[in-house]
Amino acid sequence: MWDFFNKLVEPLEPFEIIISLITMIFAGYASFRLMMQNRRLKELARTAPKIENFQDKIRFYEGIQTSNPIALALSLVPHAPSIKKDVEQFLSTMGWKMDVEEINMNGINSQSDIEILINQLREKRHLFDLRGNTEVHLFLQGPVVSGILIGAMFDHWKPIKLYHKSTPSVPAVYQYWCPLIK
Image (cartoon, rainbow, N blue to C red; front, top):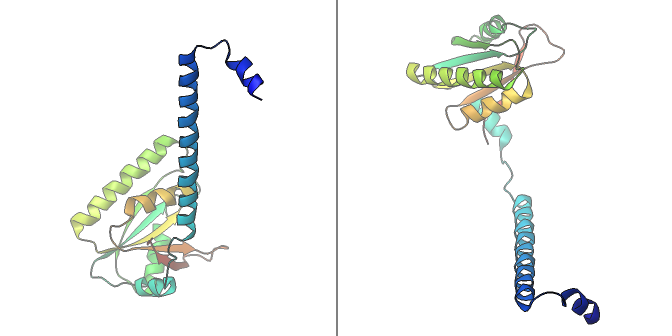
């Protein structure tokens, strides 16, 4: 083994050998540290606290708890230009009185559409703050990516209550699913 190493190192100058060994030691140390950090992160992920009493949180946020609620109806698909009438019918069926704001788009087809959606959500958020709305009932018909963007936009803001239209769809029948919580 040493003969092989000597033949490999023989043409190198002593300075190059020292630099190579130091580099090898640092690379080994860095690799070891990254491996240990990765192991700690995996252990932390396994021991992350679980959501407790989620069903209680769902029941707590159900219905209207505040004085100035607002409904936000988002239709982000090309085949349904607006869901406002369905939302109004649902609210009427429940006996709830609240304004309905809407955002309508002909689908989310590109990154520029995502930018438009984000800007419209920001406008609605500022409008709701200016009006003093205290909770948002969110009705969404759109792609999954829009739901993620909406969740990021409205996270830690006001109580956001998520509603789902069942499949197969019975006209204007929404179900309260849960609040937007972590």
